[in-house]
Length: 125
View 1 (cartoon, one colour):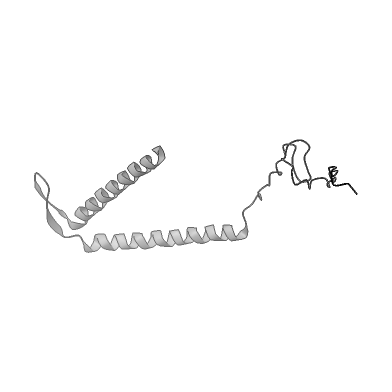
View 2 (cartoon, rainbow, N blue to C red):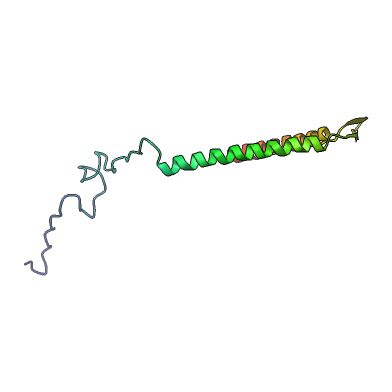
């Protein structure tokens, strides 16, 4: 027991349980020499659930591709009549499907260019 005027001796703590440890010096249990926890390793193969999800996704993508192809073929067959198309400087006659596909292609090109511009802006911020 100590008297009121003398300081108490510090108690020794168990190894690796020092509440004032900074991670420098000797490593505690479960740490590497730098005081950091050891790196965890990932499993070599993906889980079965992940592989099943990718297989399902590929099947769904294939089904969607086939459906879009069938719809596109039907679109071409039912829009084969010739229509007048008024361009800026001239008028031409072409199948309706050609006019619609050109308009869709130009729309996709504009959307892709706008997406590229917005992506470049985000990268440069």
